[in-house]
Length: 404
Image (cartoon, rainbow, N blue to C red; front, side, top):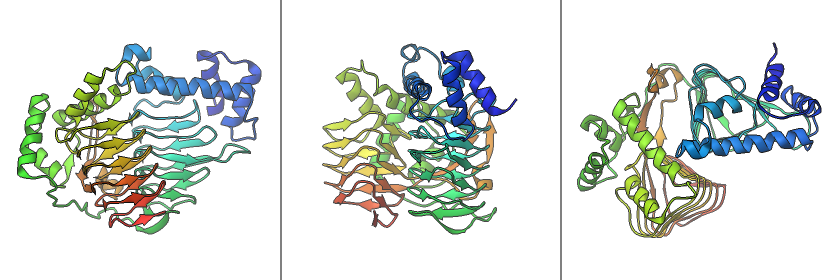
């Protein structure tokens, strides 16, 4: 049975669509021209949005979501594989438009649009705040992210492109043309910088953005919240050296962190609980902290905040990020100093059915100086130090240069 038939039967089995509505949807799935504003297409989009919002809520409160995360994923992905990998919250897609193979990874805030077909091959990885540039007429074009390709944070891909197997695309890039396999591409538009060799080393660092006193405070905080990790792993995280994600205590700390982030979106949360969550996420923070919706912090304790910090909606923070006083971070911004090997072979070092894929990570520092104002949708690259006004949509490179 072809995939379009499987998807249509999925909709017929789980939702209330007429044969005429399903005929329009089948054209969309098949990559044929279709009526983009028909009743069936609009209904499918509305059902999909509701399920995506339920998926977000399920991270904080399964009862309010009405069903489990696993059940929601089965509804959103008619071709869901046996081992779907890790799919984080904040995702927006239309049922049946995104297909994934085993062990694909979709990080927080992925927006697949409403009229683009996307295929993620096995082990493909999307960084935080991935997005699609769609075409507003004609057939639905397909984006192919092939085996073991890794797209960094806030990458935008144009409908119809193919990202080659084993390739890596740098943070903030705009992919508007096909990329060959085993290539490293950066920029807007993305251009191939070089080919990636299978054996190239993973260059971690030696950073000390936190004082010994601050590190003691963070270590004691982990003990206080019952998520202590061993000293070797702790030291690696906070000095920019590589560590493995395949660790039960560390995995629990990640889950603890992201569960708290999800809880911030609970409409019934009290101001007291919101302040308590900020204390739990940021053992080093000042006063007057305001955080918007769909906030994502990779790991509690690794980011510090000064006084009078405002963080907009759909913001993701990761790595060793130091944010000063009087800082405004606009909606959709990404400050993600979480680094992985460019070589696909080096990225996969182990797998555990209970914990998932073990990926070498090195946290890299990012510094946001006092009084900085980041416009909406700014992407700050690892190692950047930035101050002043940063316009909306800009990419800040590792040397702090602002790229429109």
